[in-house]
Amino acid sequence: MIQAQLARSVLAERRSWITWGGILTLALTLRLALLDLAPLDSIEAGLVLPAWQAAQALPVDLSVGPQSPLFTSLTTLVFWLFGASDVTARLIPALAGAALAVTPALLPPFCGPWARVAAGALLATSPLALELSRRADPASLTILCVALVFGAVLRFGWDRPRWAPWLFAGALGAGLASQGGTVIALILAAVAGFIAGALWSDQEPWQLPMIDYGRARGPALFGVAAAVVAATCGLFDLRGLGFLAGDVWGQAATLLLRPALSGWQLFSLLAYAAPLLALAVLEIVWGIRAKDR
Image (cartoon, rainbow, N blue to C red; front, side):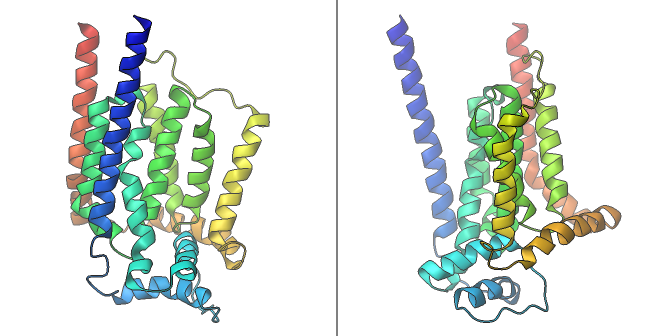
């Protein structure tokens, strides 16, 4: 009996790995295929220019502050390793978009296996996600960091795996260095993760555990190091420290005081998010009905 249950568990785990491997392969194929079909436009070229200058050991234009230190740092590394081209300029966003497609695998069991797979498939094939991932733009990196923060908080409150605090700290640190004002999205993702777990009735009581400051020291230092290294391009561009101290919070205040989201943009976001929201609602209703039976 025990051996049969163990065999079924191993088989289910293998199926899960195969399924998520297929989703990752699909996401990578859609994002990397013909990545250099269209040349970089003026906006993309402006974003990757500092990375190209740094990789070529040329003077970097200091008149413009860093717009996305994380994207610039990673793209500089790619240029240094593989050379500068349209493909390498868009490689980091493409990889970040593919990684975003498998982030639903981090969600706890109460989300349901099929809902997680469906969410991953939608993220892998979403036209908006594909468009963002095939541009030399930091948006995919920012969204990936926000998704990882949400998943880490949800798992930290559910079954408290050892990797959750480290993932939360690393994603938070990298997210702060991704774009100015991202701190708002990171905070909202953490709050949403807490609320999503707290409202699930099967978990009694659901709450973040008491902080053990001795154990929290390692993840906290890791998060600070991730933010500093990402913002300063490995300590080669100390302007990133000013970005962390000023731009991150200044642009967040600007977004709060002067929201730039138009009605059409809000409608577009809701339209793309609607399938995921509908799946989440159906899964919750299904779980409640199963519990009542």
